[in-house]
Length: 125
Image 1 (cartoon, rainbow, N blue to C red):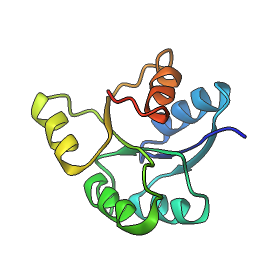
Image 2: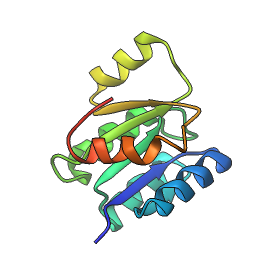
Image 3: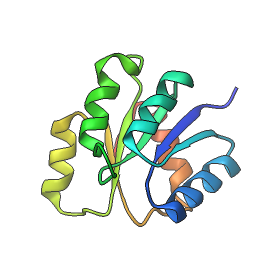
């Protein structure tokens, strides 16, 4: 059974790219365009990993993370921040908020499957 990755991303092109790359690499991918839809998806189809955009309409990535960690996700499920914000303080803020890792946009289709595998195996970025 393939690991399930939940991708929460409001940019349709980014979502399509990440989904295609991960599915090609053999992952089972669920997608959501808002934090609220991501939470609903995590409840109905529990993921093994969440890739979570920080800047979302409605509730943002930080609030979505808080709610995911508040009883929605099983213990140990990694949640990785995905953002175009590339300053060192942005990475530090994501880490201190409880994210397990950080991926900068634009996402590299070549390295994404390897990065996802690393997060699933307990490694970070």
